[in-house]
Image (cartoon, rainbow, N blue to C red; front, top):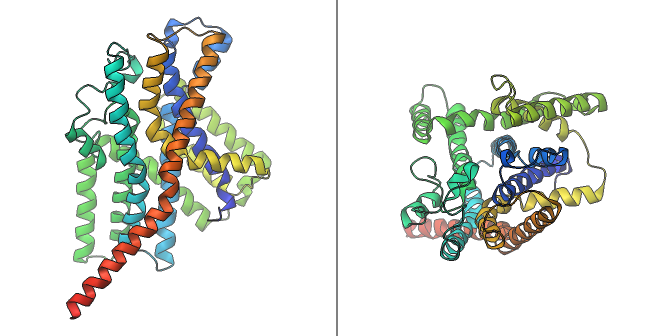
Length: 381
């Protein structure tokens, strides 16, 4: 499939965000907390630059909203909107990565807790990664709940795979938005409109306050799409304006990272500046082919990397060090090696599963359409 050139910058951001989450987790697993290390300039920079994991997820939400809302609206405009095909696309995209990720989480956690029962990670003793403790989180109920995206709503994330929390957010946004969108498009006062609005409201209540609030951030990505569609935004790609937007994004991102004035600089303000940055970058071409290749590669593996890195990183860091280490040049190179190994592992998982998503989607749609035709023939007979 030919890639739309205007999205290479968004691909690059998505890939960097996934790498940031992965690298930040490995740093927390391998190195001592910032409070316990010497505060050299390099150490301060290292801990600062590898600590944007949560902010990276917020950026993910905005990008997800942009692409999903764009796909829904484009399909509707071209009279190709089908709830059936939409659900096949979304569920096949998620499950082809999630199902293997859950199985591998089970295997790695069972091996890890058996070999390393005193590991701080498996005991939940790493302060900012307490949720990776797999105890009482590997049974069938939690597995099935995560399979159907109920983590953080009714059950915990599965095993040590704490990053699964955001997948529940994403999935329910995939469901809630089209329900509300269809309600908007249905004739006012109709029974169907009332029913769809009621379903949307009940879903927002079911998912809880946090998921419902972050839905607003996800919708900011959709706002970016409609700005691009309705207005001439090419002026945002002019060098001085683009530089201003990038600077604004960097300032807000940094302030959110260090907690400066949280009333003004928080996840919602980060969502706003990310949405503005998306509008600006869509109008910018990526001129260098090697950069396009990098952007496409890290974007392609970003979802698999996000869903598979944690259980592997927990096990491999536990095998290498019994307790987290202080920062020095030798440990830094070991950290780099762990990061590269984890990314290579996730790339292998991508080759085995996510890369086959288009084939799986095509096969499922063919099966569904075939079954539908057979049913119609049987009814006529």
